[in-house]
Every structure is written in structure tokens, then in C-alpha cells.
Length: 177
Image 1 (cartoon, helix red, strand yellow):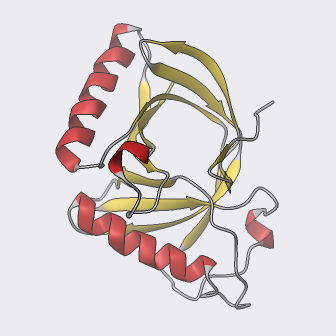
Image 2 (cartoon, one colour):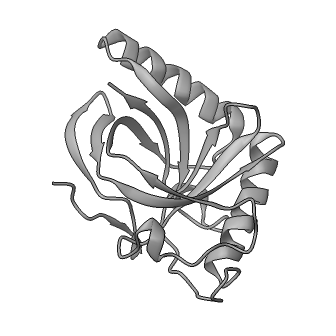
């Protein structure tokens, strides 16, 4: 059974840690619901545009004008057709059918199936070159253990932009089998 986790009081998707080796956590995530949007542009511009669209949804930009609690992390993954998919996890109390419909047609509500991820956590500013370097090292770590990557990299950000770099929590993850 996946465990509840929080970061600075904010709800996170449920997961259990299978193992920790060389600073890499293997996690099993439970099913959860996300709101997501796919946006064009480079990574830093796309996270800003995606965040604004999703924040609009949870801060009342939906059919009922309902406010939905903020959760963490904000996740960013390269999109299949180019651009980036940005995700907010919805609070566990909601199923896809319980959430208010987005007013912004770009925002999709998606049920995410349980999965297994290899995750590296680090502090600092999430600059693209550093994220790519960490993703390459994690990809090598995964390959060396004979696992198969099925999705990712997922870049996950837990703190507000004004948070001091050494107090930030960031992650690079891949979905693995």
C-alpha cells in the first residue's frame, strides 16, 4: 500500500520506497489523478506557461469556480510531439469524475496508473543543463541494473521560485520496469 507523503505541508502523490542505492530511490507510486497541459517552447518557458494554466484551474478557473488545494510536485516531462507536459497532482480526495471541469480547454484531467520510478533528489536551482546531466546519469544507473525505461525523464519541482536554492527540493525520475 502506498504511503502518504507531504512536503512543507503540501500533499504529494502516494508512494512507497522499495530501495535506496547510490542515492537513487526506487519508488512504487499508487494511482492518482493529475491535471495536465502540454505547452510549446524551451523547458524554462514551458514550465512557466504550464504552471500558469494549471494554477488558473485550481484557483477557480473551472466550471464551478471551485478552489482546489495546491499539491507538490509540479512535474514536467518532454511531450511526445515536442514541447512539454506540465502536471499538478490533484488532492487524493478527488477522482477524475469528482473534479470540476476546466474552463481552459488545454487542461486535461487524467487518472495515472500505479507505476515504479527511479528517482534522484537534489537541491539548487533547476537549470536545464543540470537537469539533463542528472537525467543522463540516472539513465546510465538504470541501464546498469538491467531495468527498462518506459517514460521520462520527469522533472519534479517542490518549492516556490523565491525559495532559496539550498532549501529547494527537485527530482529527476524515470518510469521503469
